[in-house]
Length: 181
Image 1 (cartoon, rainbow, N blue to C red):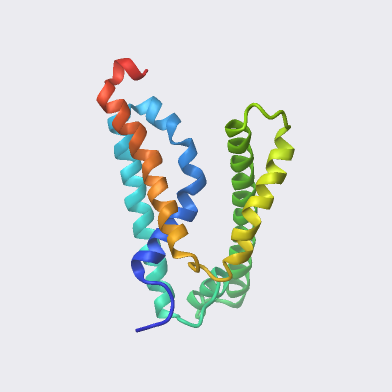
Image 2: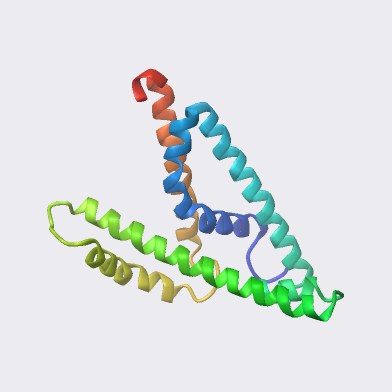
């Protein structure tokens, strides 16, 4: 067997990372499309995300020495012209860094807002709640030295993600469209 994560675990990890913050905006499409079409859209996005995750994992398995998306892009474009071999990995590193910066900022903002809502009787401004959120998230970020090092946390994240999709959909379906609008 090869070292590293399994196919299923890698798929769950990527889905949890990509959909984690985005799931908070699913209420708008569900409200506009209705619970049935919104649920189908969410399921279609899940299947597409799962497919892309599996393709990434298979590509990585073909090149086991690769340790980053930039290295993977460089390996995939090996036979191409020199300018493309230089440009593509650089673009991948810039896009990945920008995405991670934005995603981490969104996580801090969401966590800060959630703390402010949970403790609504404590009067603090959002920047202070976000600073407190950073102190809460820091041990998780520092403790996870390699991708997938905290398996139970990732599985719990995935289950909570599905709960945030299906609990409101089941509730809306049981009450009827007229009573939830």
